Amino acid sequence: MKTSLTLLLAIGFMAHAQDPTHASHHPDVDQRGDQVMGFSHEKTTHHFRLYADGGAIEVEAKDPQDTESRDQIQMHLGHIARMFAEGNFNAPMLVHAQTPPGVPVLERLKNEVTYRFEKTDRGGRVRITTKNAEALKGLHEFLRFQISDHATGDPAKVQQGR
Image (cartoon, rainbow, N blue to C red; front, side, top):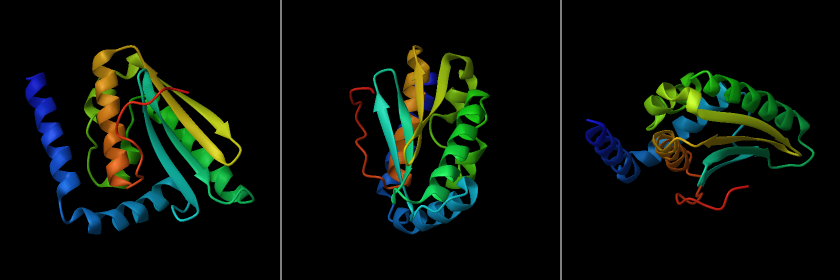
């Protein structure tokens, strides 16, 4: 059952990435993201990192003087870290208009994953760690989906952690 679900999620992820309507889907993701996150995707950069012990969600204002975006990012990411820790992934579901891959696993194994918000000079980061192999796999599926759907160009391979 678990193998079948993983296979279905992987096939769905690959089909989504190759879907010609994906290009028209991206502006909708940006528009919904601006509303859900409370800051402009045009004034900020998003990065999703995969690490051997988890990963990270990083958002920063493009302009170092843009303290309004920085403050909105910090408020949002602090909120996201708390929501995710509770197993609440409603924000990504609203942004992407679907349940991202990995979310059911992260919800079920919420006590096996740590979400730590960290401020940066221009925004912040949610550093995510786990020692649970199944949670790690779900997290990496979730982050790879984010990379694809937000078209960040980030590596989809596991990198050295920070």
